[in-house]
Image: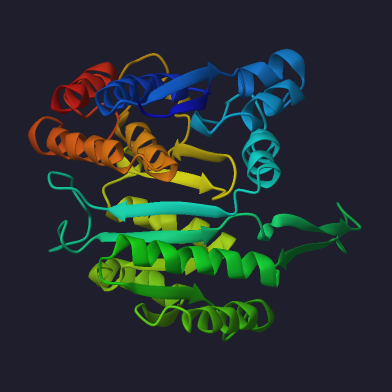
Length: 352
């Protein structure tokens, strides 16, 4: 008999509950076939809850999430809540609270999915970005002086610690070895301008590299990375970078792999509670219409299973999604799939 896992489910805002429902549907089938059990607890976290209570992230919910093995998240973002309140109060809060110091973003073009890059196909676009997830400019250090005047000063500081940088880089080396593809790890930075922060990143990168002689290493500035992701995406296997640059290049990655409808991500604490989500927003204008693509949420479930160690079950989800993309879905964009949100989930089930 397989393991039992406690899974916290946060549908969130907008179309989040719709896509998470399809992910849960798929997870139920693969877990039944593989012989392990997923026990779900649903949490009301998001814009509606905040508007009703005034509490962005109830402590009772946090305590429940702490007891889970993983968190499956739909989306956060509400049109009636000022931008930044939910993102900082929920997403960043949970990342820091649970020390989810790795953001993992596979960038993979599947057969049947359109990429805007001319003459590139699935054999060219298949890499992973490992982004440091709890430091850098997102740490919230800084402040303002003389706000609202012509002499206003705004300072936002990038915090980079030896511990934080090293554990992210080490995770990237381990992941590159486990992935066992080109076995090449690229450090993305800006050493010619951000000389203090990326001196630490670069020194640590090559120090850790000495422990991984089987992994090829190289370095590129973030602006060059952006160019080469478009011109020569086949050059990359695994990229490791800081919080801000990772945020930027993973959105570019989503576009070259076909769009937000297929892009899944993970916020990982290898020793604790990790959170998995489609990287697209809550898309409130599509709420209740059944036109949003659930494949990114379903692939988030795949990442969750692989992180929990259920690799074969995770692979079965990816295999089924690939068949749906090849045989059934016309376009991954919302409203252009040729079938409804729930029908796409059913198609995935049919291939498992």
